[in-house]
Structures are given as structure tokens and as C-alpha cells.
Image (cartoon, rainbow, N blue to C red; front, side):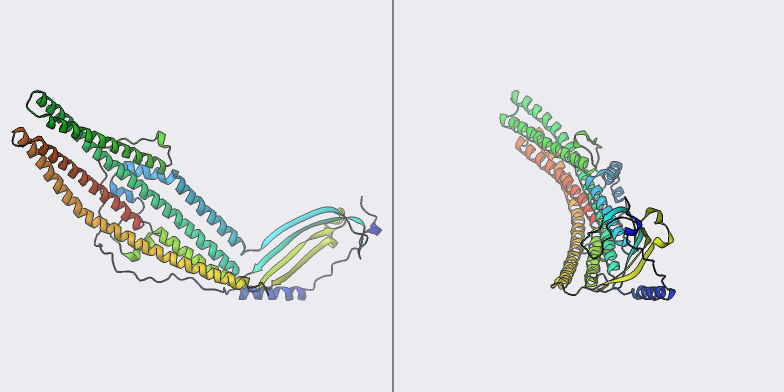
Amino acid sequence: MPLPRKARPARRSKPEIPPATVKSTIVPVLATLWIAGCAVGPDFEVPPEKMEASFKHAGFTEPPAAGSWWSMFGDAELARLMKAADENNPGGRAALARYDQARAALGLSAADAFPAITGDAYARRQGDSSNSNFSAGTYNDYRAALNLSWEIDLWGRVRRQIGVAAAQAQAARYDYQGAILSLRGEVARAYVSLRFTEAEIGLLEETATLREKASGLMKSRFEGGASSRIDYERSVTEHQSVLAELEQLRSQRTKYENALAYLTGRNASGFQLASTGRVPRIPGPVAAVPSELLRRRPDLAAAERRLAAASEGIGLTIASYLPRLTLNGSTGVRSLNSSDLFNSGSKLWTLGPELSVPIFQGGQLLSDRKRAEAVYREALEQYRDTLLTAVREAEDSLADAHHLAKAASARSTGARSADKAAELTRKRYERGITDYFEVVDAERTALAEKRAALSVDLARALAATRLIQALGGGWQR
């Protein structure tokens, strides 16, 4: 129940603010805004790094295809798997979510550059202590107002804060793109390994068929007295050995298939890939020089942005121990009676700056600056480490491509010679010139050479994917 009017606290009329007073308040604020262009702390520059003119094994001409570099393998199924991995892989989607978080954090930091306006309203019944200097007993209190708060960015604290968040958001973006590049490399390697394993399986299935026929023939010859039991048992051993290796390869193929299911975000139990009977085309080596890595690799770009964030952090720390100026204001109405709330006499307003000056904090500010500088030095060394790693990976992959191409040629020639030697040895055995041991040895050598040739081709294909990934997969900043 409202108090009688005589018991209420007396209302005081608000004095009119002379225009000169308003001008004297706003002019310094505008002047402060004008001088707020300086920002303390270092401005980031990409650290210069000495780079060689070219790689050790440079001299190739085909650049990696921008974007869909996997088209260089000439396999439609691989392209389909890449699309599925981009859309469904949990790791890639988690990296995208981290990027979205960083973008949201940038939005939060950027909001500090603008005035914050809030509204408040209340209606309450209040009782004052009768033992205080001023007591009005019990009464009603009503208020509705808009409040303004705006930090004047004297030393660039807000801008440095935005700079940190912006650099971190860019780093998160490049991390996401790097995660996708890495994911695509894993898909390509798993797929290529699966197809080359299928080729080796086909080779052993063909060999197993030949060994089975040879074992049957040796059994007939042994039972007919035309051959010894030793030759027959050797033929059985060779046949069973091939069958055992065949099952091991089939197991390995299943693991590659399961890996592709995982990479594409599928349940391995319901995922199958039909055999195509062919291996993907092996891309030729690509051309690049180390300086291009700075714009071709997202992990380098991310490391550079983290270094930039650390640099901005130094300025942010320095600004934190300088005076902070905030412009505060409020306007609205307040009354002891709800019926009087929107009368002209109920108006209220305030406007003025607030200055906060850190004076003594026990060495906290100095320690904070040392910490920020140490964070920058750490980020600098991580950037250099990423750069050195990038050059090393490219050199390794180029060396593999260079030397494995020569190895493939030698292996191919060796496989053809071993196959011819096995054919001639079988003819000698059929004529009774040699024993079956030489046949087994020649066929075993021929099979080993064919498998070795496949292994080198697989190594070339894997080296091509690593090289494309090492050079950023055609990615451009």
C-alpha cells in the first residue's frame, strides 16, 4: 500500500543543463576519439626466412591440379570417395566446427569496438532503515532507462583484441583447410593401396591356379613313376604357400576398405568396394620451389596467423596497463508513482567519461608482458619448424618420385627377364634336362619380381600423393 504523500521522500527537480555544459562534455570526448588512432605494441610482419632457389630434384613441369588434384589419378571411384570424405568425415566436420567457434569469438571481440546499449526497468516496493540518516519508511520505486557504455580505444587495446581474434579465426580456417587436405591425402593413399593390393591378389590368384595345375601334374607323374615324390611335395608346398599369401593379401585389402569407410564417415560393416581390375594412373612429379610453399600450404598459413595473433597479444598486454577511458551514459524515467513515471519531471540522464588507471598490481603487468613476449617467441619457432618441415617433406617426396621412377623401370625389366627365365626352365624340365627344384626356384623368382614391380609402382603412387599434399594440393591462400 503506498505511503501517504507527506511521508514520501521529497522530489527534487532536475536542473536544466546549459548548452555550454553539454558542449564542454562532448568536445573532450570527440577530441579523445580523434587521438585514439594510435595502438601500442609491435605491428606484425612476416619474418624473413632464407629459402633456396629450387628443390634438389626440381625440373618437372606439371603443376598440381587446383582443387580436385585427385583427378590426376584418372579414377572416378576415387573422386566419389573424396566427395564423401569432404562431406561426412567426423574429423573434417570437427575442424569446421572449430573454425565456426573462432569466427564467433571474432564477432564477440569486434562487438567491443561499438557502444554497448542496455535497457533496464523495475518496479519495486522498498523499505528504508529507520536508524539511518535518511529514512522515508516504505514506498514504491519505478524506473525505466537506457544505458550506454563505450570504451574509447586510446591505446588500441580493443583493436589489438580484435586483431588477436581475427588472426586466430584465420588460423582456424587454414587448420580446417589443412585438415581437409590431410584427409584427402589419406583417402587417396588408402584407395591407391587397395587397388594395388587387388592387383597383387590377381597376380597371386593366377599363380595359385598355375601351381594347382602343376601340383596335379606332379601327382600324376609321381603316381605313374615318371617323377619323384620330392618333386611332388615341392609342388604342394609351393601351391599352399601361394594360397597362404593370398589370404594375407585379402585381409590387407579388407583393412584398406575399412579405412576408406572410416574416412568417408561410413560404418565399415555396411561398406564395400567392388574390384575394378585396374590400378589408378600414377601422376607425374610436379614443379614447385620452396618459396611457393608459403602460399601453397595451409599449415604454414595457419602458423603464420598464430604468429600474428601472438604479436597482437603483446600490444594487447601493453595496452592493459595504460589508462582506460570509458564513456558512460544513461537516460530514462524514474518515479515513486507509476502514474507519474512518464511525466516530464520524471526524466533522468547522465553522461560522462570514466577513467581507470592501474597503479599497483604487484608486478602482474610486467609478468604478463613477459609471458606475451614468450608466447610470441614460441609461435615464431613453431612457424619456423612448420616451414622446415614443409621443405623437408617436399624434398623427401620429390626424391621418392625421382628415384622410384628409375626403380620402376629396373623392376619392370627384371620382372620380364625373370618371367622369361621361368618359362625356359619349365621347358628344360619338360625335356628332362633339369630337375623340378630349378623350376620352383625360377617361378618363385619370377613371382617375387612381379610383386616387387607392383610394390614399386605402389610406392610411386603413394609418393605422388605425398608430394601433392606437401605442396599444398593446389591450395592457394
